[in-house]
Length: 444
Image (cartoon, rainbow, N blue to C red; front, side, top):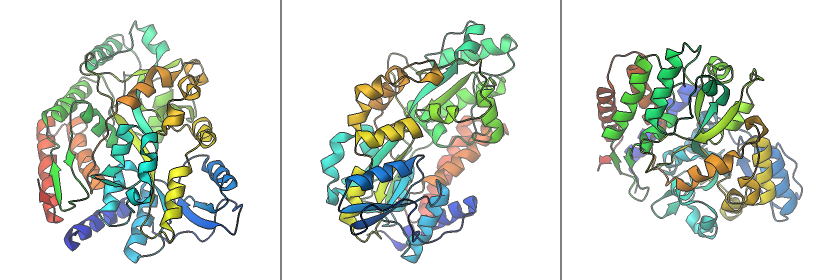
């Protein structure tokens, strides 16, 4: 049984997230954004922020007589999570199905806010997803969500800039560092790339490529957690980027600001190390240089002979404990993105990277050409292999707090220059251990 102290501690983390977002909570919306086709059918309320999602909802409702989706966009990311946390605390107001990023599933399952879908036919669809995608939504024998889209990582680069300086797209991080120096020595106006101090999940993915496994956690034993964020691989990766930053070979601009977006498209960064949703993000930015030649390649490796694939981001559909008809809600979670028609909307209009294998492994998706990348088949060339090689990741039940602390330590290293990588991650280890014990966890 989960102790009240642990649950209270996670509530504190949720309140912290609410303070950071500045978003007031609220009840589930009473009306639907979309049209209900069969008003006599069971209605399942859904919170989600996917682009072009209304068309996916309409498709589901048109093809299901007994169940209808009532969809609301309750905000993106932490805005939605804050509203959900408020509903959890009040005992009402949550939707039946909610879109959650995989990294926050443990933060909500430990609060008994999510339904274990292994009791509602999750095994029937497990084979439709990659091993890594399924691990991200599972804890022990329990399954807390159905995977939707993912973020296997690759490298988007300005071929025109690299060609101008005689640089071959780097396949290893050593080659990446050498390319960065070549650009600087040539007096290029920009740098090879940005290492954002607020990268959080991005930074953690880079650490994972060097073998980091920061958390050991199983919702079956929620009072226990293993923490190892100061492993040598993570220290080496952070030291690598700190060295590049100190030499002025990479920028340390915060990501996803207006200035950052401008620099992504104006040539300031010759390379954008990105997830599979990155191409869609990039294409949606204003001010793209018409002369820019963008291409995609696999993410650089520490050991080219033994590549390690990594993932940044990914979202899911979970059934909340407040769902009135959990069986109907589970059906929606399993089936709303369970057709080729739905996924073609998601891919072509929302730039989602599918984790549903029937479309992920289809000729259509493999051979899809992207005009922004000069007609390159970036899925075949880069992201399909990255997705297939990703083995999954274990997040903590206080992941948002852990990311906040990671951001502080990375900032201390690459921006403030007040710590070296080793000291920063040792401090992070101590901070997270203290926090976990204060919340009632037993350290493994």
